[in-house]
Image 1: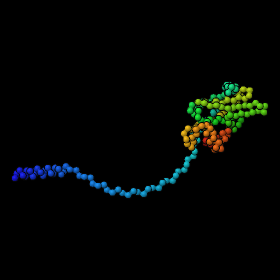
Image 2: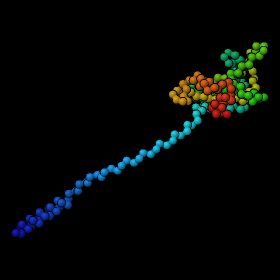
Image 3: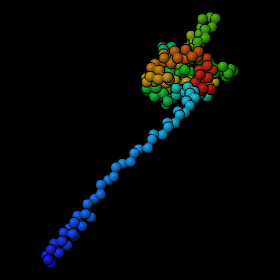
Image 4: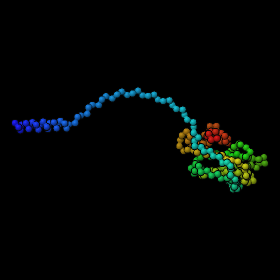
Length: 198
């Protein structure tokens, strides 16, 4: 009988251990709630103003002294203006427009400027540009002239190979765009106003 009690006791202990060592199962997930009502879309914002396509405007004042040299085989005076913004890539792709003022006049004259006298002689003020440099030349039929330029202002208008609203693939595209927008590049004020660079 004692053995039977011990067997019963040990069976009860083993059953108790087994019952307490089992983990409970997870219950079922509850039902998801209803989807909320979607909000209204906001009003469209106002379009911003067109940018100036990274156009750079620079004034050289006072204008430096002339140096004698050659332009296209013609004796001419010249002034070199250092412009580090004209990197090699920019010099190849950008359109540069140059204007000048005389001491007695607030009018901006475009370059190239050519004035022909009644006797057939002419005066020319023109420019070239390349990497880091804009060069202004002045000459007439007889040779170099000391044009009385007070100051120079120039615009560097970059082109952009990427397509887009302000993207141009060539200098010709920039010129065509200015023309299409009614801008006369010989009129300084029109170019300055168009690019908002007064």
